Length: 103
Image 1 (tube, rainbow, N blue to C red):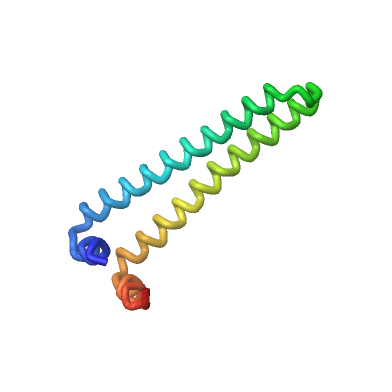
Image 2 (tube, rainbow, N blue to C red):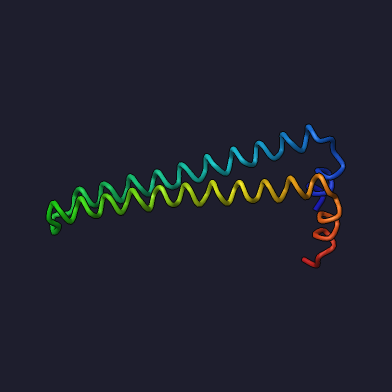
């Protein structure tokens, strides 16, 4: 709670730096997690002995598509969150109402 209040009371440069750091951390975490899952699934598909070549190619295509969907979804959620946060920072009334909500 004190972190939220200090953000509200700080100048806009500090808020912008905080938001920028949060965005960077979220995108980096999303990309690394998605990349790890993609590589792991790719190695499992390539090492599978009970699949034909066509099935492997199809599975690799689906794996790549799901990897890209995860990245696009994560970026979309991050952009929407930042947009909502930006609107809330410019207008302090929504923040005050959110802080009043019971935990």
